[in-house]
Image 1 (cartoon, rainbow, N blue to C red):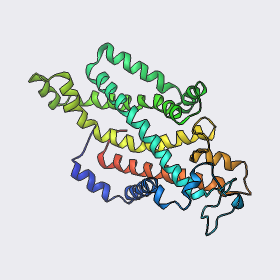
Image 2 (image 1 turned 120 degrees about the vertical axis):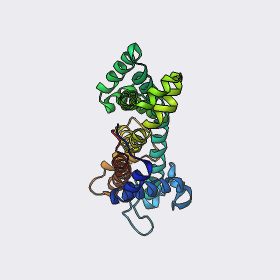
Image 3 (image 1 turned 60 degrees about the vertical axis):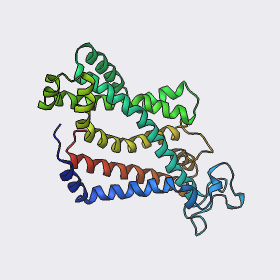
Image 4 (image 1 turned 90 degrees about the vertical axis):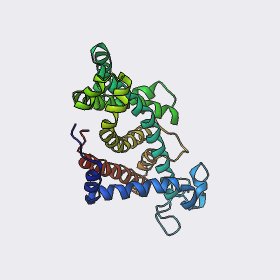
Length: 282
């Protein structure tokens, strides 16, 4: 993996308008999620409580994105949907990323039977389409938030294992690694203190890109009825529920779908900007 000095990389990132657009979208979506309790106009509409005098109302001054089938404000539920989607993405990556990184370090640096066992297991998981694997896991588990997160986590660690393995195989031949080995540094020191920091740009870039993919995966499971269950506000569930009333109540599906697109687009643009700036192979 080739890399650039951090000062040059960040300067290139700041000079790329597409990267800045992605950063602005990410900050906007994360800000909405964090401030949902303060900025949403109808916070009680997060749960099953609605307003039966405002059922299926089109977008208006009172309800910018309209209301759903029991009169709940759609804008409020979308903003809380941002919070749920980002929380699930964070939980999945916090669990899957360290597991994948550690396995990739071990396989790339140790070699031998450790490399063979880890990489063949990784290949098995990578051979199965992620959504199919997640659906198979959810088929045996109750459709809850925790189980949806578990299903996505189980299929996500191999991508980090493969990425870090490729980086370590390249870095292990560099002079600084050989010098550390010559002076008697332990394997753990070489892996975690010498090689791992040089994997950081690629891992950081992948994390940024993966947030969008995890959001899409979680939304897909919810759209199929296998993820987050009502009345919890979830973007995928809202798209699925609103599709039953198309095209008359078009806002029920269109606005949640646009929210998913905005969230995924922001993280993808930000991730692409980081990849180009750090010249990371992801």
